[in-house]
Length: 503
Ligand code: NAD
Image (cartoon, rainbow, N blue to C red; front, side, top):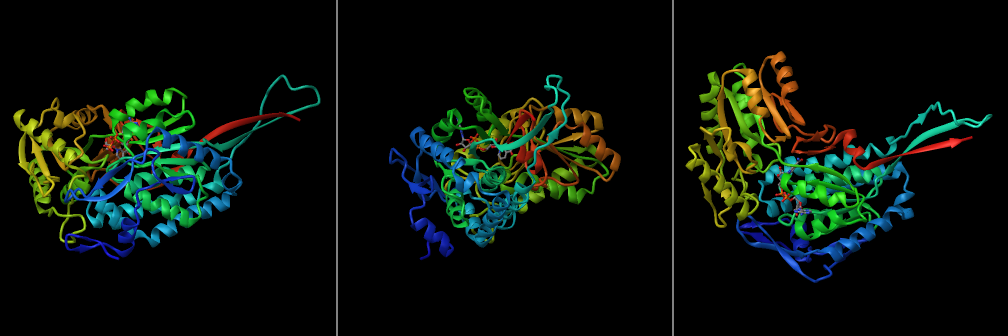
């Protein structure tokens, strides 16, 4: 069977998935309705049409899912699985995802809005690469033997001490809507590598690829209860997981406002907590930069995915010698992008994720205009559901304006001229956020100097948004706690146990 969106026919497996009532919860290996029987709809943001009705999980469902995850944690099928077998399982997940790459990409685009090329060539492959990268880790999780100097050793005996690295336990993974499958993979892959079990809560706007992935995990042979999936609202299913005493670790990616609230939720049981939060990333363009590359890089950095990217290059500081070229170049790059349904191959940029998000972005621009900002290009909302926001370049934005200080999460760049390097580093650091930054220069020493001075979890030199599963990613300041990716990403899911023996 084939479902059509406008005049675009969906892929057969996607059509089948949608026709087969995909909206149940995955708990303990079974697809079930929410305890209340309630559902909510997920919407194609380009058209406003309902794509599917999915289960609305609440506290009772969180209880069931956490209990299933606890059971699976100590089940022989999981707890006794050898590291090599866990490794093979992660690789198999990647293989199964690869077989369904185009289906996952189409579904992500339909649900989130992003252009299909972004899903197909960027995000789904990036999600798969998380599983391939972490597939290498289970066989390399080792403790240490530790020589001790304890004076209480009985005569004739000695102390033998070592550490074991153990899975932290049941993980609640709560993810946002901007890049749903990548965000999911960034939590599932290291958590599975460490031997944890998981309750995943996708964002209410974008539950579909998580539900599709749930089927793929089963196909790959993930034991029942090891990954459970609860669709629902943040304040209901999400909050229930955050408060739950059966959850050992909360791995959250989302807004700084919610992240701060979760600190108190986690305090109840002192569950482990990592927070990957918002940003307002600066990009500094030096006079010696390769200007076409810089303009292209920062334009992509803010316009890709409609600016709904945590590390988006939202604040551009261009040296006065190149300022006008940067403003003109970014405006031209924005104007060139054709807005259209994510599945329309003639389009470059899809809608924002929802009408609410589009209105929020629009409000920022209206407020900025009143406060004196100049809209060089963009700033308009269009489309059948009023969700398409045109790529926007603003100048004359003061440091105290909300446009400069708050995360907009839309395709909105603010460009400001600077004269002096120390001055601009001060401006770049004048933010509550500290997620990422970039500097564009052909000068090696300036590159190093600025990379060292910027307060950010990631600094790119002559590139932006270059991310990979082996590169630690996390936020300084109010952009988060802890790091994902790489060895540090695995640490999030491990506890250390020290064993001291008198022998
Ligand atoms: P959000 O904070 O509103 O929601 C994120 C997730 O948390 C969703 O699944 C939501 O349902 C859930 N949630 C909401 N309230 C909750 C509560 N009280 N208890 C538990 N869960 C709750 O964020 P969003 O609007 O979905 O996503 C955009 C934000 O995510 C932006 O701020 C962006 O910068 C951030 N983000 C950060 C990173 C990173 O790696 N640092 C990556 C992507 C997105």
